[in-house]
Image (cartoon, rainbow, N blue to C red; front, side, top):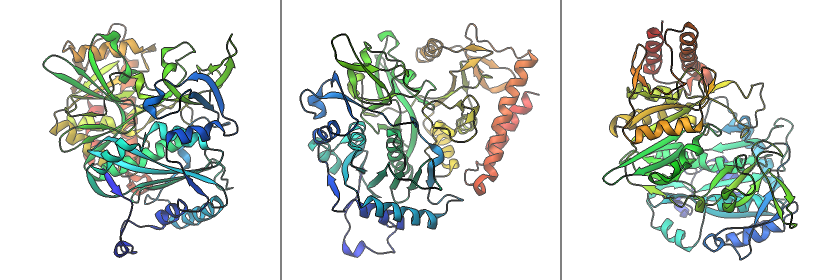
Amino acid sequence: MSSIQKLTNSQMSKHNNKFSDFRAIIESNFYGNNVHQVNSVEEAYNLAVKTSGTIITDIPVFNYEALDLPKNSKVLVNNNGSVVGRTSAARKIIGQPNVDNKELAKILREAMYLGGLKKYYSSEVIVGLDESFMLKAHIMLPKNFESTLYSYMLNFQFLNKDFQNRYTNSNKFSENELYIYGDPEWTHPDYPFGLVIFDPQHNVAAILGLRYFGEFKKATLTLAWGVAHRNGFISCHGGMKQYRFKDSAYTMAAFGLSGSGKSTITLANHNDKYDMVVLHDDAFVISKENGMTTALEPSYFDKTQDYPMGSEAIKYYLTCQNVGVTLDEFGNKILVTEDIRNGNGRTVKSRFSTPNRVDHLKEKIDAVYWIMKDESLPPMIKINDPVLAAVFGATLATKRSSAENIVVDDDANDLVIEPFANPFRSYPLKEDYSDFINLFISQKTDCYILNTGYFNGKKVTPLDTLTSIEKVVEGQAAFRPFGTIESISYLPFEGHLPDFDDPIYANKLKQSMKNRLAFILKMNVENNGYNALPVEAEQKMREIISKLN
């Protein structure tokens, strides 16, 4: 999607809706004489290796030529201090209720002034890997954070000659290019946990007082998903893969928060028993017109907890954040992973880790899988009503992980509801709800729920989950009625069978549905009903509860 960077004099007017005070404040700083434009990944790498605190390991970057990196490039490590996850409490979205635009604009102007006193680096990347959806994003970070800039250019698609040509020829929409400003050293007494300001209608964001790389990645996706939503796409925080057979294909999307099993499901190779391709494990968009899907990023921002040194996965690491380093028997600097140092160790991992990777799928989606950690649900259930399928997506029940920096008095083990597994939405919830109903109806897309947590006190293993998916893919899944609820069925799985005559289980299931209803009712009033769902959502959940009495 070619977006707008340059305007004519006649277009530069306060009446042009492409302008706002926040866009003017943020974009202006990109043109300061304190800003150096970084024009290649090689230049970013050379800056990063000279940054104070960067650890240059002895692990070579695999296929460095294809990444436009210099020969003998090594995996770089940078650690961020006490905070090793995303701080959702820092996010402020302009245009939403209870957000003081004037006060935030004042704070931002002061932050930009202070930023102008420091040396900065900027660069450009592409978000979206097919001509049907491409955006240009500009990033700006101060000196001493060159490693963050380098990781950013690797995580998204750096603007080489090939992608410059593709971007020029991509679909054109009337949208501003994205501008993301960062100052990890910023402090303010009223914002001890940092501040992230989004103006999604004008495609700008400022990330202040936060060092964690995931803030910059997800801020960019927040803006890109907003653009997609306004231009005929469904914005998806999930993974997508396609199973290919001789005369058919099965395309599935799995939606879940970090730590839910989303990447495990998406990237699993099923012991090579299928011909498969992977779109991405985190971010993509679906065309509402034809059901085609496009990945937004070439690389993966993966957890390192499951990959000790010696694992094949480490071959594809590019940079690491919040991991340890030690010496091997030969004196080489190697990684200490598996979250030994701290939780949520991360890596930017290259696309070459999935040799069956694609960036665009033309076939429609056959099934959506909501990934939950709801102990009242068996490992897999099927929702046969498109409205109820969207209601369950809007009330997706899961648990937080170490990927999040929780600053309020919440227990990380508490069950929480995160609609459509997307905490990065910048528009009303009902709009995603409507989009998914239309997807289920117009594309005849099936809907399943995967419980990857515990069921009746027993852990649902990754093997359980993948075996269930395989049965669906192969057309061997024999679902049974889910008690008295006609629109739901479950896949029998040894050791995980629901007993509807057990009053303890029946009460647990009923309470789970009541929690969903309570969330729907809460959305009706919270923030002046900004995220209220249509009345049919409440009605559907009340119908389910009535059948459990």
